[in-house]
Amino acid sequence: MSQETSHNLPPKRMRESRAIKASIVLPPDTNNHNTMFGGKVMSYIDDIAAISAMRHCRQRVVTASTDSVDFMHPIRLGDSICLESFVTWTHKTSMEVFVKVTAEDLMTGNRAICATSFLTFVALDPDNRPILVPPVYPESEEEKFLHETASERAKVRHDRRSQSRELAEKFVLKRSWEAL
Ligand SMILES: CC(=O)SCCNC(=O)CCNC(=O)[C@H](O)C(C)(C)COP(=O)(O)OP(=O)(O)OC[C@H]1O[C@@H](n2cnc3c(N)ncnc32)[C@H](O)[C@@H]1OP(=O)(O)O
Image 1 (cartoon, rainbow, N blue to C red):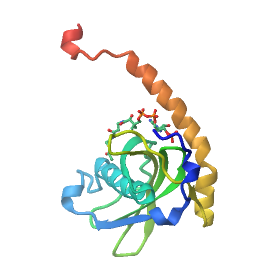
Image 2: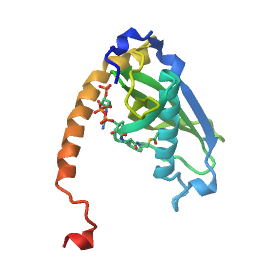
Image 3: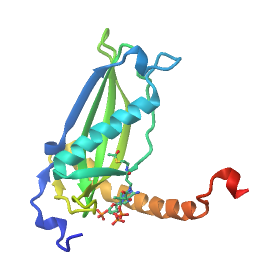
């Protein structure tokens, strides 16, 4: 990776990476409760967050981690689901992306926040090595809140990554029947 710091790159507004996706929940998206599959929502979250990350850095990106996704409200068949995402914080080669998922009952207009999530993406150069990303700065109150609280979340992720590595060392690569 280049030795320069990301602060040599011109900072970008959070709003420049904003992405919005709306769609209607159809039968193939739903489970036996007639609500949207959690896995489908998670796939939408990863998709839109990657768009925001690429809009911010204009490089290829990979998902390094997804913080927990709490499903706070069901998304029902026939509802509209809307996802909104933007980059909230950057370090050297990594970017935190916030995703908000809302549902709207199209008959009544009632809306609810169904899930929120933070994901971390890493920008890669053409040789698949992490590459520096521009810093990001907030403007609105919501953006300022997310930016100011980001380094604390990054610390938690850093600790979790170390724990995941320690955990992975406890497992063997052999298939379970070969390891017996
Ligand atoms: C869009 C998609 O669906 S992609 C498919 C799913 N994702 C993948 O397959 C990614 C697989 N993982 C990888 O390729 C690598 O582990 C990478 C690129 C994420 C990290 O590469 P490494 O060689 O370990 O690089 P390194 O340790 O220097 O980390 C690079 C940056 O990623 C950050 N990072 C790496 N892992 C994590 C993690 N689990 N959580 C948060 N940040 C992380 C580091 O903090 C560092 O950030 P910084 O440069 O801003 O300080």
